[in-house]
Length: 153
Picture 1 (cartoon, rainbow, N blue to C red):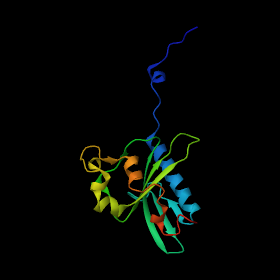
Picture 2: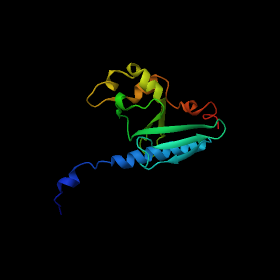
Picture 3: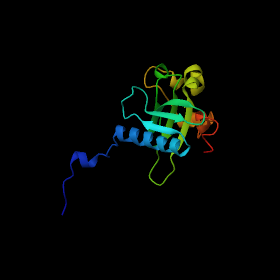
Picture 4: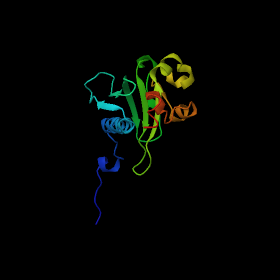
């Protein structure tokens, strides 16, 4: 017996971008909490800020912007929208069973040295950054951006 397949059944299902974004935010929040930073997810209540983190030892607070992808691709981000006072965490979720990868970049670096992130970051149409560029620049697992002790807590 054969069954007719519908066009929607033939298409590969596309993952909801909101789910990817929320997963990225929650993974980053968990990592910050694990490192001793008090962390709160804004759930969209703070424009352009995904997480608020506070280090009770240093008394420093951080506004965090999270960009998440399910697989290696291009993190969409325009240099024009970068806030130099924020910390940007780029997250590669990967497939279940594979480790999540994090790239932590001070907003000031993105803002003041955009050329080091390649020309693609500065193009007006579809600007962004590749994970390979972030890795080459030494931002992978750069939890020290959240304070000297953040990577050792």
